[in-house]
Image (cartoon, rainbow, N blue to C red; front, side, top):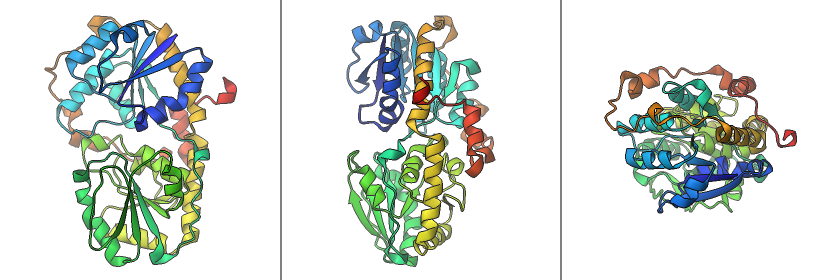
Length: 376
């Protein structure tokens, strides 16, 4: 049976960590995976022949979504973060896509709640984005105090979106003039007189070594609707490499980081400088926090733990009942409601302590136990 995935590209993070990483489990169920980029013309013959079409992370125009829905035998929507566009139409497009799909796979609790607002819970599955910690070497943390190296891994963030971080980085640079920032990304030009910055293009082949050579990972997300479900993959990479993390309390940052255990949450420039200074001065603290983060990844976010569940959802979608055309709506005239309003959404996002530290396993149980490779 053929599974046809429509993705941004084969180099896209979501594809590599949510489809390609699980492909072996599809193969073991005799499910053949084919992919095509949505930036190119859709091969409609292949799409129609597939048992299920897997649409990943794209909120398409209503007319394109309708064509795909009508042509597909089954439609499975996979999303682990919202697009960075914060226009009001984002929630309408999300609602349209979730209603059009036979089933939806989400990567975060926030997106699960949003999806379940529009369809029955049995049409929504939560499978976290995963990494393989074995692909990462643990950082050595040999540097001391002002010689420490920060790293910011952001392969595709537009340059303009990071300008609000300048005051934070300037505060760090003033406090610790010799601290270096390794900026890993393709579109992140930055120059701050108070901060020593080295730019590195992101590459899958050098990602692990780049992180292993750092001492502290930093993660910053804008205070915007699209950030509420973002940030996890960057954090997982840092943690897999044994790096403590300094981040602002937005999106998945505040779920994944246990303040004082695997990193620090900081909002103001002074808080950022304090957190970096404390970590830079104490290699043993960095090792302890880095080890805590790596343990979290090993216990709950390894790809082999969730690949079986992913394949099972795909198989269940193929054999399940196709939703009727009347069930979904492709109209564009969907006005945002109070529930879709960012301020309202943000207020309904309290901190969930079950996602923190030693109780992280409770959150995994809420999602549904992952299936290990050995159990398939």
